[in-house]
Image 1 (cartoon, rainbow, N blue to C red):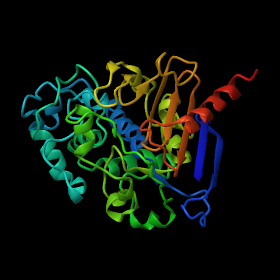
Image 2 (image 1 turned 90 degrees about the horizontal axis):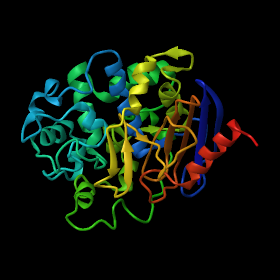
Image 3 (image 1 turned 180 degrees about the vertical axis):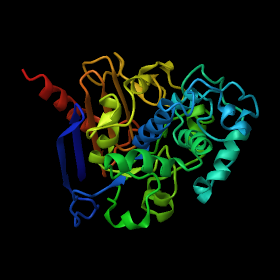
Length: 350
């Protein structure tokens, strides 16, 4: 319906394309400044925010969470470390306390409930996709360390310096150019067994795609799921990871701080998504079972419906795809993957 793709190589934009329609009725063209809710592609922004703080020495990814958020140590979580948040292995993929209606937009309510909760499995032993909770977990640490929200810190330290039109908490001045999402027929984990970790994860908090059209969803900070941007702005930020700390001619992170992404934290069947996943620090890592490209140091993540962000530190390549007609997949689909393949073919033409 409407979509865009961006590719950067060695820190510079080499592809920036957009087209189609930003509404279901096909009356409004997708323009250069159209943005949409990219769902879990937002997680790459939250992760990079935490990695930036680690690179500056303001937090230690191997430190227990309680060092920065003392209340979190309740109910057997004393040994949970920040890296467990980044690798979806903290055992808090969903919530026990009911989160209904506008509760998801109440930051204090959500993080207080997460601090009280007992993990659903032993932290650090396996990944279980923290579909919505990851952003609040990372975000509360960022807030405790910086004194400001993750969305505000991200805007000041990453989006604005890089000229990236990406928002975690999207003000009303941007709403007129947000594209309409067309939801998929199926919801996440529709086939999950009742009372399984997967079913419980998506049942509470529960989100329907129709929420993306509301001002409350757009303006809230849900750093795991409600970032708004386009392929250009996703790539503008994620180029920092792909190009080892330099994007748009600016160095914001060290090479070592970017290479931390590839410190493997878990590798095995994900307790929520049900497929073997390999997680580094904040990103999925390429594997033989889920190969994202020809190189070793490729990290990625995608959003419900099809948006994707891929960073390749070997090729210094970043590829992003963003669209408004959603498929049922949580981790991207063939539309974005075919564009990724085309980018690799252009690097190695035969």
